[in-house]
Image 1 (tube, rainbow, N blue to C red):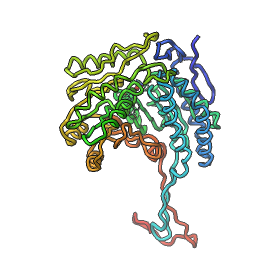
Image 2: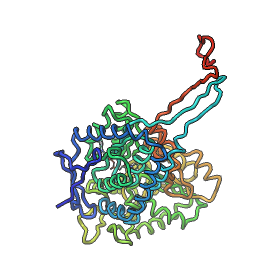
Image 3: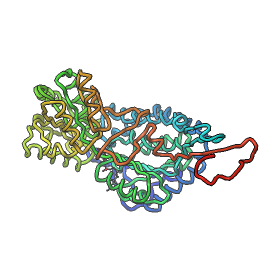
Image 4: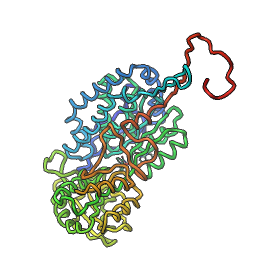
Amino acid sequence: MTAQVHHLIGGEYTPGTGEHLIAVTNPANNQPIAQLRSATQTEINQAVAAAKQAQQSWKEVAVSERARVMLRYQHLLKEHHDELATLLSQETGKTFEDAKGDVWRGIEVVEQAANIASMMMGETVENVARGIDTYSYIQPLGVCVGITPFNFPAMIPLWMFPMAIACGNGFVLKPSEQDPLTPMRLAELFEQAGAPKGLLNVVHGDRTVVDPLLTHPDVNTISFVGSVPVGQHIYKTGTDHMKRVQAFAGAKNHMVIMPDADKQTVINQLVGASVGAAGQRCMAISVAVFVGQTKAWIDEVAAEVAKVRPGLWDDPDAGYGPLINPQAKARVLELIESGKQQGARCLVDGSDFTLPGHEAGNWVGPTVFAGVTPEMRIYQEEIFGPVLSCVEVATLSEAIALVNANPFGNGTSIFTNSGAAARKYQHEIEVGQVGINIPIPVPLPFFSFTGWKNSFYGDLHAYGKQAVRFYTETKTVTARWPESGIVEGQNMTITLK
Ligand code: NAD
């Protein structure tokens, strides 16, 4: 018997009544480990109504008490770190250490949410006119929705609901139907931390659960992380229905390698950044741009990548696990084939890899292409697999032009020992997150996660100060308290007198 995934609606755990059943499988063998019933329209409405009702009293709770819930939550998450990582590994196939990192990067956002009071400070100016002061408050919006992808089932839900709720909102989370067990455990621990019932609701299912949330009249904001076509659909539909939307989408991240970089550092950093987590990271390096004579390093990079062995989540020697599902594996294999057909040189070919004893899993071995050019599909499309494409250019300016011509703008990095080259790159590159001798520059939560171009639709990004702006509204008060109690004379103009 497989476990039943429950929805969390108004503080009650329920399997739901939906007739659309979805299996949650172990990607290492594709055996079912749980199943869920996609939430019905009634259940979705109940979740939004519960969040709306709970928010009415939550917004009156002192900001320091809201922060204390986050402190207790942070403590509980740390206490359950290994347990969460084990669950996460089982439903995603991630290695245990990588799964721990997924949870940890979420815990860091909860720590930031515990700082909420200082982030919700408004502005004041005394005497904007004689005896008149103006000050602003930051107030919560109401009901916020989060729709999350499969690839970070702890970190990405934790990007969203702790910040939204710390700001004083209610929340409805719709996690990926492919790995809902970790987000559910996160929700249970949130209740244990003292969050009032109904404040955080979790409804499960696929796209059929998303659309009613995008159009629901009581939903104020939508946070989405996932693929480009779905991100565009979410942004268009949500904004069409007058919601505030932030939609984080796909990526194609380049690492630029300068001739003055340290070769061994480049190789060490590139291996994990490209094929780590089976390449299923939105900040994975999928393109390495070799500048000038560094093209001579490509064979050594390929030789190191070739040594990485996929394996089971609890194998300490495994470099990464399987892809999330058979469709993802088929898509990656098809793209590898297209690279060969379009004339790229396949230096390391992982298409035939399988893990002995676990042949039914979604395994793809590490793969490296050289001689990749921008017209090739492996350059143009997000592969989301353990595939590194190597491109050669003559100069830094050519590298910058290449990266800037790419429609994605999530992350990029440059490896160099030249301050001048690094400065030129950080200044001229049209990408939202830049690493200098750092391959995956995901900002810590006192900053925000700032993808650009087709990697992000919206204005205000995830976590940090931008998340506070996203999940709140500003109210500006202009006040006069005349000492005499009387304001003399009439004012027929728009000026403050
Ligand atoms: P996905 O777009 O398939 O699914 C994301 C969420 O949207 C899931 O909850 C899913 O149920 C829902 N969904 C799927 N199809 C839908 C539809 N037609 N209408 C409405 N909702 C729908 O993404 P995924 O495969 O789970 O995740 C991988 C993608 O996420 C990659 O493209 C990756 O780059 C991207 N990603 C981006 C970031 C970022 O910060 N930019 C971070 C992580 C992942």
